[in-house]
Image (cartoon, rainbow, N blue to C red; front, side, top):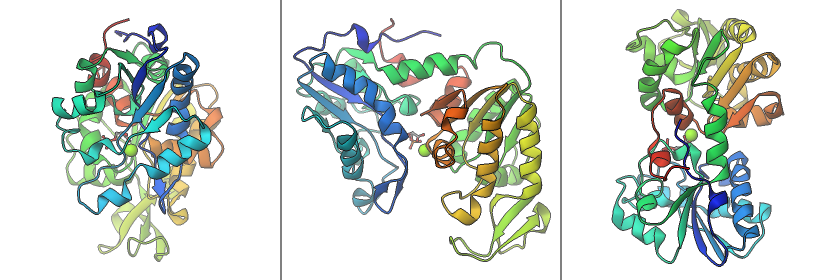
Length: 350
Ligand code: 3PG
Ligand code: MG
């Protein structure tokens, strides 16, 4: 794998540095629900401050804002507040959500120049967004001298282990909401794994239309909810017996046992995406069961990626039981596919 040049080699004393971090954290009631990605950005920010940078401007996207109303919902203020608590230094400034400008997702040079204005160099530490060719991850790297941050490099190093020969069985567990994004990746990736376990919305989608050319294990039973609400009436159903007007919101107990068994036998594990609507306690057990199984297998090289899976792991206090907690969801999947990530490709080589 080609490695981008490290921020450690950059001359930053007296400079103003633009840092792209992935601060796209889960929010709940306007507060940061899991600050893993913010903490993961700290080593690079501290390095820059220690090396005498005069200004550190941190930018990130947050969520997928579409409407005007989304501006309040996805403002960076709560993220900036958490970062200030963790790193109180007046030289650090958090810019507003990059996706509030349409030029971000269209990888517009005009927006890249706006971000770069007044900065001397650019450090990309947003591994979780490296699969996006956006203005703050790609275009800007051609406007300013670009370097890779410590997190980005550490992610490439650890995930790189999954790219070569891995110990088998290699078990891939996938779920979560971004079905469209992940299906394509899974089709390319699944062939490399010995077992592919799928839960969540993705499993539903695969029953409607399955473009995958390899076998996957889908839930045999589900937790059903009479409506999409945290306090809905619930019941356990064999998948085919879920009433038509009910929703499947988590994997059922039989599926948990089967998935845990597979995970237990694995020597390499990659898990991305929750098994259900785990933010709601009544529908969290499937995701918990997967988290516990991954953490319990101490013989495997285990990688957990994606903001929600990592949040689940943290809530169970299990993050230190897995080999590598990746801040990348989609990005780690695409890296596993052996794709060159645009955010990495834009940085000159080491
Ligand atoms: C993620 O959470 O996977 C990254 O922050 C990228 O977010 P996106 O899928 O909205 O581009
Ligand atoms: Mg996400």
